[in-house]
Length: 213
Ligand code: SAH
Image 1 (spheres, helix red, strand yellow):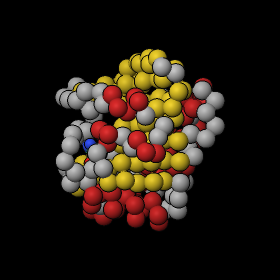
Image 2 (cartoon, rainbow, N blue to C red):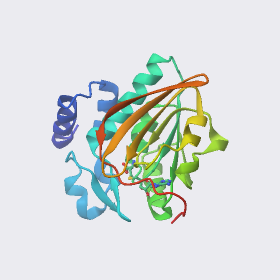
Image 3 (cartoon, helix red, strand yellow):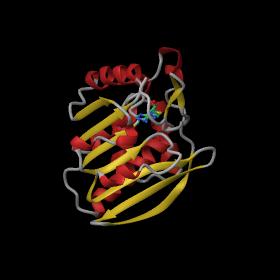
Image 4 (spheres, rainbow, N blue to C red):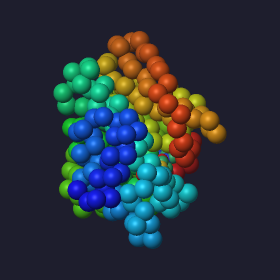
């Protein structure tokens, strides 16, 4: 692992992510491949970074934390071949991380040009267990569901209830909710019942309703 990548992974571990599988996947994927060429020198900062169109590549700590929560859920529920839906492909970095951990990742992005670049990067990295769609994440991806895990990487003003309906009977939804103050929620399905908890405060770009770009 590059020295800079190693110190970022150590920092994420110090910040409380202890899942070594997630950390080693994060350390093995070159984050600079997911950034515009003018920002590659900042790839190993623990910051969200701009990827164009007013969007950002999420903070590495947050990517690790959300991936670890999903993995823990799959282990606790003994889900052996997790099917994951991601809303907000963006750069494709989180998608690449998820693809190394779970059986299949479906990812929806509303901005065509970002989706196009993400597809190219994921092909380049041989991430073949990924399906991408240009669409509105508020609708999920009903034809590919149900999903064992749904991860939303943009903040919803209110909970998109339709995503809960696309969970498998033991599935979970990880979603930032709020506008200026945002909290990361974990919803867990138990058959027809749902429980939820707040994980922590977060800062994401908004989950934009409607209109594709
Ligand atoms: N996981 C990404 C995060 C990108 S930022 C990464 O680390 O690179 C959030 C992304 O959500 C943006 O690309 C934005 O265009 C997308 N997004 C916002 N609203 C959306 C919607 N309604 N449907 C699908 N994608 C959406």
